[in-house]
Length: 274
View 1 (cartoon, rainbow, N blue to C red):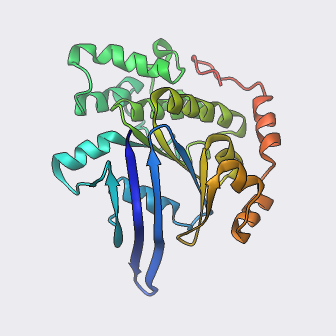
View 2 (cartoon, rainbow, N blue to C red):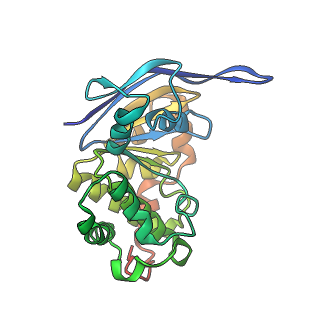
View 3 (cartoon, helix red, strand yellow):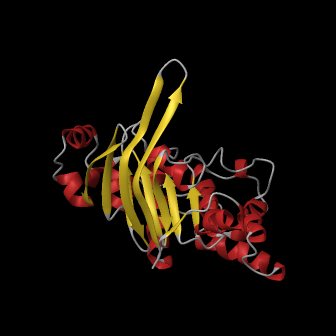
């Protein structure tokens, strides 16, 4: 059982002309293997700051992040090992894949950097990962990202994240850049992978409908503070905090939202049926 602890973390930025801004205010949560937590909030609520601290792109002003009881290393082999165990799926599949490299290169690179499989097995592992995210490896492996649809590109990004065999995933608005009719397919893929691989997933979003669909537990973040948390249905259907109630009122009905998406009949070519 993998356990990630985000323990009383605050983050303060010094901004020229504006003084100090508290992006996170005493935030705590734990993420375990096989669990999905939805982190919900509007832009500026602190969601991205949490992601940056977890990936060690930022350092907390106070508090601590621990993996299996040990503080996250700040440098060297220890940090590299931590980053192999925790991978991120970015919001924009158009920007997160280098347009000059093939799909083979994108998935192969983490395999080589992290010595996941022997060199002789790399090709087979690349193909296995592409098939794992429901893409036709023969059809996409030698293509460039711009030759794929948005949904297919995000599937490649997920395959790349899985290549290092992580135990935890941060999914930062992974479907917000996709057409509405494609979002359910990618979310269902992530849910299947989470369940089958026993991954812990932190799902970052501003969308309560997808958070309810995908998460076991939801935390609502407002101005750097957790204002509400609990089982997904409780938070979405019976919100207690006024901020959560405002988000709920502004969101589409989750059942209608996904019924419309699943009933659209939208599919993708090149082996990427959604």
